[in-house]
Amino acid sequence: MDRELEEISANNYTLKCANQESQARERARDQTIETTSAMIRELQRRIDETSGKP
Image (tube, rainbow, N blue to C red):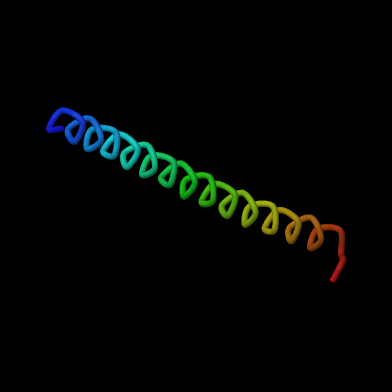
């Protein structure tokens, strides 16, 4: 019984760590998308400004 509880606890910890790592990767991906989108908007603004578009 104790061994089973220890195994469940270890598995729970492993899953918790994997979930935290997954969430961290998701946050990093979202930040990369946000940064890239801002850069694209700025580049488009500069292109429009240079070409005389409003």
